[in-house]
Image (cartoon, rainbow, N blue to C red; front, side, top):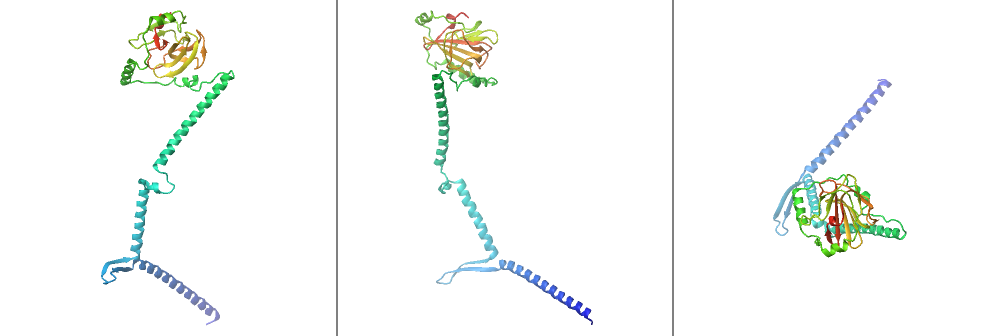
Length: 314
């Protein structure tokens, strides 16, 4: 055997040794894995006996795998029960830092009070600002019933049911405002010397009738006719209502009050002073209690309704 052959045999033998060693190592690892799994399955017997008599009380045949499984399932069941008790029962109130029912109720009540207090502060500031404007000779602002806030209801449509109409008639028949509607001769004589300016020139379609709870006069005129103040006075109400639409009320001297209903648009704001014959609104057809474009005009004297046709020539 020459040197070359000897070298080849030497390296081949060495590689064969390495291969055998690697194969043997792999087999040992597999045996170890199988042995670990088998150890988990090995059966053990747990026996509980009395100390005095050595009498066997309990005898269990267990394995490590069974023990791990039972313990794991027991922990899952216990955690589920604890979480359910905390979520669905008042026990959660005993957890430190968790608010109880009274605390949550007080939080909601305090939030509502804060919101109300904030609105009151805004109203107070607006009131003081108006006082400052009046003292300075400026025109006060109306924060409640501005013309912009009134016009936003132009496109609203309402429908009334039969039950609503019956309820409205029932309420109107009652004397809910406790106002005396009887005309007294002495009262008429005291105001007959006052000259009332016609608020609208037109045709009377529905006269004053206390028996039908109609405390004013309905006047029809051409579209977009101007409604004028019958006497000088201060505007005390300029707003919009569901039944009578755009309404304006003027307080005059001698305890006289004039009311103008169903207008299409108001030209004056609350707090403004108007003169006799000054335009205050535009005749319209607003509100539910209307059958067409007209002006519903009322006169009141010391809480008593007057027949406008006895004092004004329309």
